[in-house]
Length: 398
Image (cartoon, rainbow, N blue to C red; front, side):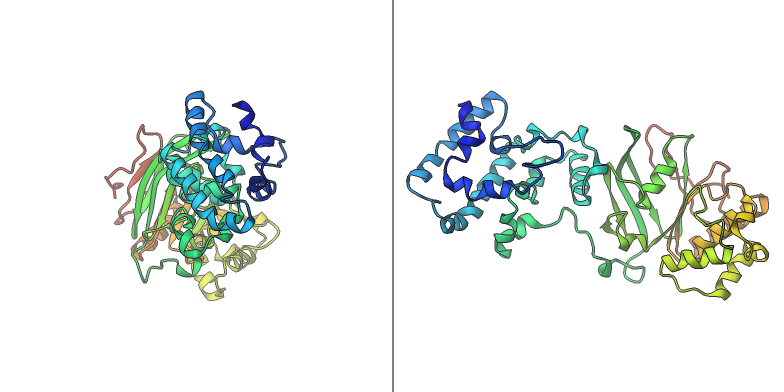
């Protein structure tokens, strides 16, 4: 029985050798940097003895196909391969993708080294405990036999070639004119330094709200903001903007947000004005000197904005960086300790900007250890130090 599991046996007939085996040779399962090869039996025969015997009895029916020449020519094989593939998908669905799990283990996956599509597949569905069988109908079994996807007529492959989630294309991104602005995160999880830092984080942010992100040092506040900004990979979870699923790193979603981290992200050699102009150019935001002067004046740094950025005080640098966020004209602000290095006046100006942004229909997520109090604006609190990190319903005091 073990002989029938060898690659030599599987490719002993020309039907397999000249068709699917030839396709397998061009995939990472056959040749890769680690030198670990998956052969036919690894993907089509369970490893444990009981399931293996059941599979062998099923496979005995294939002998009749060989005897009667069911697929003994390329033309016959092409005519039958969609039917053959559907049989495999049905089998994988019935046994919960047992053969796939011979080698693949969700807990051992490093999503940072996977393609974006693989990350979306695995983190969203496997992390939410959805059976791998449901993924089998979305195209994973074709990874070894890539010709099948291109060969099958469109009407036949619609069911199994649909993307994992209805990701909107950039030109179809929902805007504020068509749907209320909202940000929804469900089941977010991530890793840092090989350990699970956050898991099952759920929250919803509506237009006109300022979500205050709380937590002790190392709780994952910055990591959550960086993940939402598309700067770090998600281990699990789903993100929706204006009611539609999106990928955090997608250009469509990136055009909706402005991120400010611990660092101001500006060049010391350029002046504050030059830094702002360059940053807005990268974001494809039209430059308006009058508008920039208005914002800088409101933040009380207009007089120093022409100086080299490296000669400004830390508080002045922070104010120029906050000006960049406001000038970006993005509805979603992700601010990681924006009040760092600000004096009392600077903190008061920041609160005024946040209040005006929210009252204009914008959204903001803010990390602060100094307790920014945005009066007159709904300010739910998400405490990552709490046993169950869910937004508190109460608002911050006015």
